Image (cartoon, helix red, strand yellow):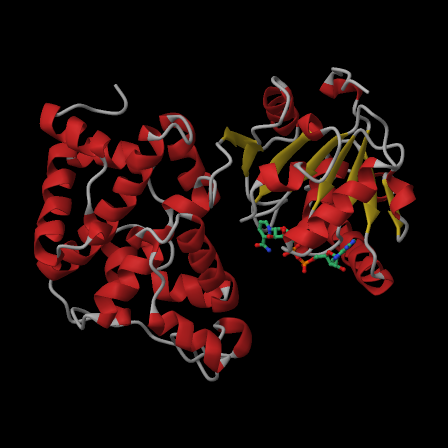
Length: 394
Ligand SMILES: NC(=O)c1ccc[n+]([C@@H]2O[C@H](COP(=O)([O-])OP(=O)(O)OC[C@H]3O[C@@H](n4cnc5c(N)ncnc54)[C@H](O)[C@@H]3O)[C@@H](O)[C@H]2O)c1
C-alpha cells in the first residue's frame, strides 16, 4: 500500500518504545506539549520505575511553578507492556537498547500493528537510519529523531532522514519539534550525525596530548575551561558521561568511518573501560571520585594553555568544516548543534570566522608537518577558506 501523506498536526498520540532514560524524557517532552502519550516497554519493572519517576518529576515541576497542572499532564500518559497498545499512535519514537538486530525486530513488529500513516522514528545515537528503515515494508515512513540527554532539558534534536525516507517528512518533524520548543537541526544519515561526529576531537585530541606527555589531564581540563570557555574539560566530561558510553561511541564512529585516523580511539580510555573505571558512576575514571573528588590545578603559563586549547579547537573546527563540505548539515545547523547539543561556548564555524580560517589552517598544517599523520589533514574547504580568507557567516 502507498504511504499516504498526512499532516503532522493530525498526529495526536505519540508512542514511545522503551521507558529508559531517553524514552521517559521524550515522553515528558511530548506530554508537556499537549500530546497523549503511550509508553511501551517489554520490561514491566522498567515501566513501573518510569511511571513513578515521571509522576515525581511532574510534581516537582509544578512545585517550582514550571508546570501549571502536573495531574492534567500525567493524565495524558498511558503505560503498556504490550506492543499492541501503540496501535492508535500517529508517531512512534523508539528508544530501546542500542542493538541493530533488536531494533529491526521491534520496527518490523511495530509496522504490523500501527496504521499505514504512522511515522516510525528511532532515537539511535550511532546506528544508520537506512539499516533500521530496511526492516519495514514502508521504509519511507522511517526517520531518525535524535534527542539529547536529558531530553526535557536539552534543546537540540537532530533530524535524520534516511535515503528511503519520503520527501517532506524531515520538514514535518522539524515543525513538530519547534512546536515542542526544541532546536531541531537537519543532518545526513552518516555516523555520529552532527554532534557525536564533530565533537570527537574534544576527547581524542585531549587524550593524545596527555599520552604524548605534553600536558597532564589536569592541565588540559584547566586550559579548556578557563581559557577555552568550555563548561567542562575533556577528562572531567568523559568521566561524567561514562567511559562505557564515550569510548564505545568513539570506537563505533572510527569503525563506521572505515578507520579514518581522525577518529582513532585511545588505549588510555580503553584501559579505563577494561578496568571498570567508568568515571563518576563507578567512583573512578581519569580522576578518583571516592573522597572529595579531584581539585584541578595547573602550573602552565598562558602561552602553554593557548597551545593546548588551539590544538583541540583547530581539530574541532576542521571536523565542522569537513561536515559542511560534505553537506552533512548547513553552517547554521552545525553551529546550533554544538552550542545546544554539547553546550560549546561558540559555534565552531563562527569561532573559525573569529580566529580567521587562514590562522586555523596554518595551525593544522603545522600539526600535519609535525606528525605526518592523516589525522591532521585539513579539510579541502578549510584550505579554500583559509587561502581566500573567506568567512562562513557574514
Ligand atoms: N542515554 C543517552 O545519553 C542517549 C542519548 C541519545 C540517544 N540515546 C539512544 O536512545 C536509546 C535508548 O537509550 P537509553 O539510554 O534510554 O537506554 P536505557 O537502557 O535507559 O533504556 C532502554 C529501555 O528499553 C527497554 N527495552 C529494551 N529492549 C526492548 C524491546 N525489545 N522492546 C521494548 N523495550 C525494550 C528496556 O527495558 C529499557 O527500559 C538508544 O538507542 C541510545 O543509543 C541515548
